[in-house]
Amino acid sequence: MTEQAPGGPGGRAALSPPEAAEEARALAVRAEVTADDVVGALRGVREARERA
Image (cartoon, rainbow, N blue to C red; front, side, top):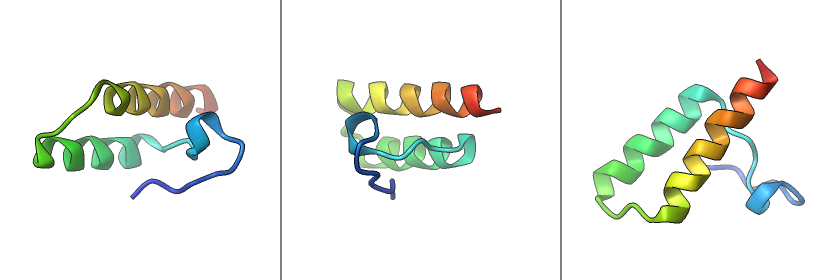
C-alpha cells in the first residue's frame, strides 16, 4: 500500500492525507497496530501538512 522511496524517512514515501487515512483504515482492519505503525501514520500526516 505504501510506496517505498529509497533514502526517505524509514525508507517510505510521504503519504498524502487520503493515503494516510487509507493506510490507517487498513491497519485498523487487521487489528494489529504497532507503535511503529502509529508513528509512521503520524509522520505521514505531518509531512503532508508541511507540503500543503
